[in-house]
Length: 127
Image (cartoon, rainbow, N blue to C red):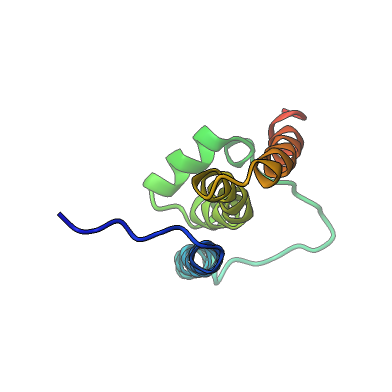
């Protein structure tokens, strides 16, 4: 059995930094791949800038985005990448709660829970 590494402020900061880097890079790769698919399928289409067309209905909720992504539709994959980008700092805050709890810093756990609650309310409260 491997010895458990102690949780220190430096280790938590490193993990949080890596979480942000991986999240942003993953998001960029997903958006880029969706953009390539979209351009391969629709790159030659004529664009009419006089008419505004909003986002299609299927890309306005999570189920539609996942369905379009699984069907390898470029716009759905791009939207999924953007959701990953939005979710990255939320995941960072959630992991911060765990990290602060692990080092038994109750004050920061409380503050981070408040921030996490505000984030979740702003993301889900308007739905």
